[in-house]
Image (cartoon, rainbow, N blue to C red; front, side):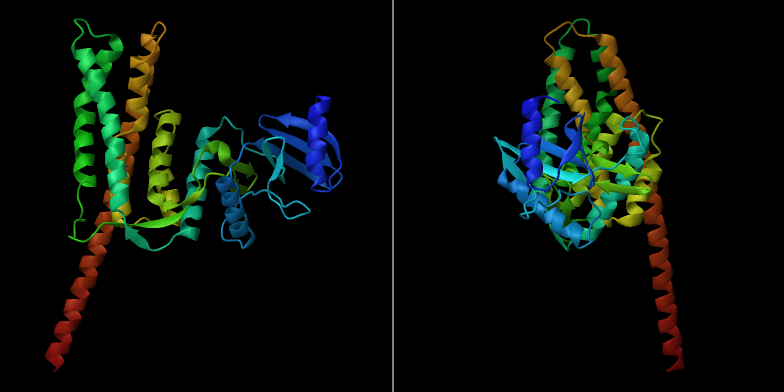
Length: 354
């Protein structure tokens, strides 16, 4: 390690009363080995809001509300050290037992940890009109990309292989987007009441790389962008992200959904939000936009492969989650009908006795 970098790290470690005997770079982290143990030192530019977020998560972790790897306080009580225009913080070093490239295993744990985070910090349901309006804007933005792509493709005498592949599926996604638009434009739920969703602490950047796995201990980290919000948005975004990252047949979506649902049961309105959010996937729109703005020679085969993979993964994911939710609703409806029948039978018995 260069002398200047070593001097800077030593300045930072002074705040922790640590004397290192070895430095080892690991991507954005530096492993610090000391007689007191091994630590991970991270350098990052943080604003005041992000530092406050880390403090909030640290407090929740200390009270055992959530299970997270947080910055360690310095000898002065600071979680973040400001030095030379950068922010530094120290964390315990964990020897991970699951490789960063094993997304299948990491997502399996991530859905559980996300559910635990949301469950442990959830609050009451509140009006979600502003969220629906935000979803309408996101939907409109993605739909514009689709419409522009289709306009250009349909005006070509000979559409490219990628354009042909997209046009063959376009009617499905346009119809899905209209279904989502109808849902988010409704002010009332199916019972005629104001639509509400629950708040919770959201990580802000859920990713399989923001998960530390050491044998049986799994914890979330990188909470700089955490904030309170409608947690179902983060859940839906996690499913959408996983469908773009994993191979179509690689993920067991019903297990992913069950693992989340088992620790953080979703309400019927949250389930409806999840299903309609997944009707207009962002990865598809980004691929279309990438194709339209490609400046160099376009690799048609690569775009066709990516499109085929995204469509296949999205279809498998959506079908699995919807089937799981439909089965849950059927069980719930049967249980409610049985309870209602029992109440009516009990009332008739009381009436007969009188």
